[in-house]
Amino acid sequence: MYALDGFPIRQVLDILIKDFTQKHPEYTVKVEGIRDDPVQELTAMAGSNTLPDVVFTIDSMTQSLIDAGVLLDMRELANVDKSFSADDIDPAALSAVSATDRSGLFAIPASHETVQMFYNKTMFEQAGAPLPQPDWTWDDLISACEQIQAANERVNCISFSTGGLFGPDWWAYWAPWVQGYGGSALSPDGKTSTLSSFESLTGLQAYADLWTKHKVAAPIGRGGECFVEQTCAVTFFVTSGVPLFTRFVGDKFEWGVQLVPAQPKGQFTGTGVYGFGIGKGSKNVEAAWDFVKYLATPEAQRLIVSSGLGMPMLKSMANDPAVKQLPPELQAFVEGAKIGIPPPGYPAKCGNLYTGMVQSAIAEGLRQVIQQGTKVEDAFKTVDAKIQACLGAE
Image (tube, rainbow, N blue to C red):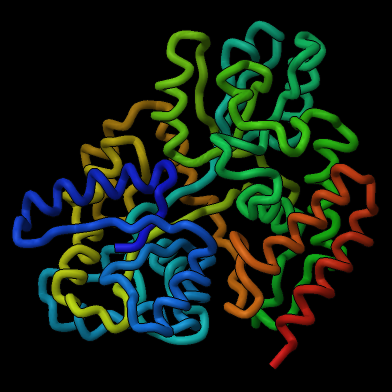
């Protein structure tokens, strides 16, 4: 099996493997960690016919893996297996790990994630700022942050970096601003990069304004430990932030989780899905299928939910006790699935929103605007040109 070693995916995998092997002692599961660019590594393995039986994938990476011939189409296995039905899987979660240009079952999601707002309740109250509400706009949060920073000289209110995993260039942070102002990263047919459209530029400018105009966001490059250290009051992360902060904050201060604030065109947040498929050429297809389909069982989903490391992706679990009994700080993630947007998909030759040319071009554009004062239209016309050159190449 090929998978990430990072938190929280490896923890989820450890839980699933332990339970799976107890139920299926005839199988031995060995995990090989991803060391570099996963698409490049797996593409090379596909070329040498050395792919693992089970392959990890994540939303915007899936199309690249399909294009590279890494993932097996599991439809035939699913069609003859009466114990499995894809109908119960949340369509949005399944779509996120599906091909955009062909039919097929290339992966089964393990968890349906959204990014929500973690806030230091103690810091808000001490500054006399109102506590975040489900219907807040970004203007509401900015106003509260200005109060907090006025009362705390060493605080940059908002952090877009948590646990060292992501920074301000993570798509789940900036893409909701683009959509929240009526823009998009790609045209509907996926053939045109549209980050320099008027609407997209307006959203990107509003995002950059958190640093350049309102000055309520922590500088790029500052570590995500600020929430624990109380040098920021708000951070944005996925479900696994709950056990993370429960562990490291302890009783230092009270904190909570709320839905992300809304932009002018609506309330949007990034929705991330990771899952597993079968490597093409697998010599143990039956064993691999048994593990992959296990992800879509209530037993496996309850393990993930009860650990606080993910949200269920089975529709039938909406009223499951494992979900209904979740603590208050996790309820925002249950509701948050309604406002989640998936990442735009790019062809393998151009990279994706995690690695490769697309990611580096967007990251550089944001860095120029936020750190160097480049006009947003200048920076993202260049970004569009780079991406379009790849999209238009045969």
